[in-house]
Every structure is written in C-alpha cells, then in structure tokens.
Image 1 (cartoon, rainbow, N blue to C red):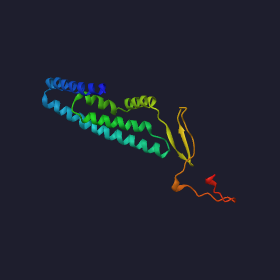
Image 2 (image 1 turned 90 degrees about the horizontal axis):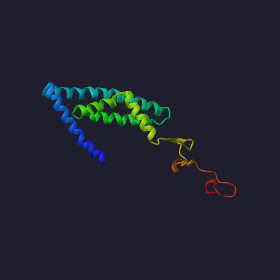
Image 3 (image 1 turned 45 degrees about the vertical axis):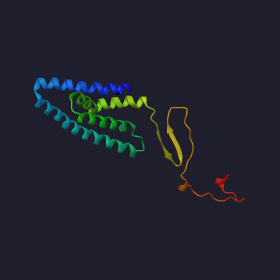
Image 4 (image 1 turned 90 degrees about the vertical axis):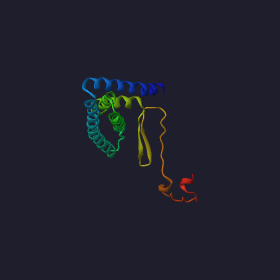
Length: 162
C-alpha cells in the first residue's frame, strides 16, 4: 500500500518537473502539442497491438488452449493506453514501453512464471489440470440437467443409487 502511495505522489511530481523543463526549453505551445501528439500516436499503436493480441486470444481459444499470456498482455496494453492518455512525458515513456511487443512479452513472461497459471477444462466429463502442485484433485463431474438417466437393474435399484 505504501508503494502505491509513493507512486501517486512521486509520478505527478516527476511529470510536472519534466513538463516545466521541456516547456522552458521549447516553449509552452510546442510542449502541449508534443503531449497531444504522443497521445494520438500511442492510441494508434494501442489499437494495432490490441487487435493483434485479440486475434491471438481467439486462435488460442479455438485450439483449446488457455490464452494466459495474451490475457496478461491485454492488461499491460490497457494500462499502457491509460498511461498514454495521462498528460506527461514520463507516463508516455512507460506507456510506449508497454506497447513495445518484445518488452511487453518479456514482462508478461516474467509475470506468468511468478503466477501459478493452470489450464483446466472438461473433456468427456473428466476434469484435467496441467498443474505442477501436489494439491490436484481429479474426478468426474456432470451437470444435473445433462446427466443421463441410468437404467434400472433387475433387483429394482437404479445404478446411480448404489
């Protein structure tokens, strides 16, 4: 929590200092133009990168895989887009870094390794998980509204009552 408080205090101070320095060097109007230009360029890059990531999510899901990498990349893209819309050069630099595919994939790769991501699903009523932990419980399941009716045995009991 203290880390976030420091970020919310330090980042605006750095932004103001950079805007004053750049404004003093090139003037107020060119500084405002540069801030607006970085926002427009950033949004164009965000649109292209976002569509590319969305296409990869659809491909992975169509092949039955969990698109964990792409989902985290989407979060990084959203944060980068918000930073690019925030006026200032420091947040723009961080936002553009998040839009750089190699840097974003490196960052997300590190996040994926630190977080326990598993693939799960149902095939033929059997739950499967690709998880390295020892706390994996495997079993079968069915939905009550889709459960097939069992035939009654000769002794009068149904198979599912046993």
